[in-house]
Length: 425
Image 1 (cartoon, rainbow, N blue to C red):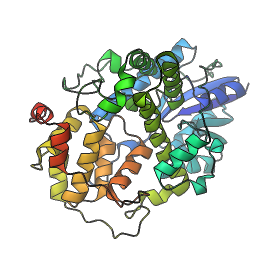
Image 2: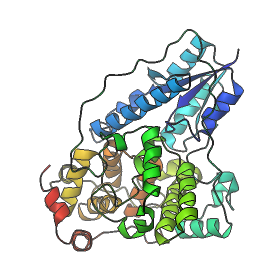
Image 3: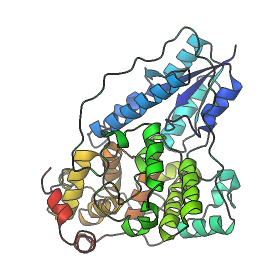
């Protein structure tokens, strides 16, 4: 009987998972696996751990939920530790698997993992599935992707492109003999800071697919989508933005599922500037993915896509920034929130990044690494794209974005309530 391994990467869900559906169609036995790679826990060049406790806890919740869902479907989840290129071929030999299915991720480290796995001699079927739009349907090739987001958006909208419908949960074949699912871990009694704008230890913000889908229904069952454009630059609270990003980042929620629910909302309650802006933001997310398909490793150079010299760096200033001790009150409040909760608003991410680069004259790559370590909604594409955008080393024709912290405080925290909320760690 044929056996395939499905290697879960950033696709921790059963619904709308084309790679998992492919494995379920092709094999008589499917072994769902998650690999804990030592690279995920290795220290960064700046010396801090690559994943904070917040990221680890949110991932743990997503994996526990995935394990429970798989058990409901008559399957399970096997968690293994090691480099994928070593432990997956060994597992395939143990269970007699003919190959591996997984999500394709167009970032250098993730592509190197797949290359090493293929070099080990095992067939790998990698499926591109994290974007809203199908790259093959775009009105240009990857090499001719517009270098300005507005031109990309206008071309997509002029072509009338719509995403494919999300796939249902596949009927999973049986579990291979000779291996047992990983036992469930003891529940973590940790509680995230009560000031959090994404309190992920509460059931409504749990890391798993069920919580993601429930949040989707709650959000689109309200008038919040109509208010989104007006409120999206808020600084604190659970309702000012959609809060889809942590689930989209882990893959507990697919962009196509979010879009389908958005269109159902507009059919029921009418379209508006607010609901359009949700589509707009999903397109930005796609754009950073397609930039990776066009430029790949070049996006990770010190100069990015430009020719500027290697950025300077002040380690002491960087440490003050990380710990919210720069003396700039709004930036410090934002960085304290990030450390305490693993989350901060998009407006504050832009401000904090700008301040590190343009006011403290630090290396943008160090800031990107800190965000990678801290953010529960860390997404390799969006994180790299946004830091390049602020630093002026990506495709933005304006050559970087500097945010004036005084102006930002006046416009977005006029009464000082956010600064007061996070005046202490």
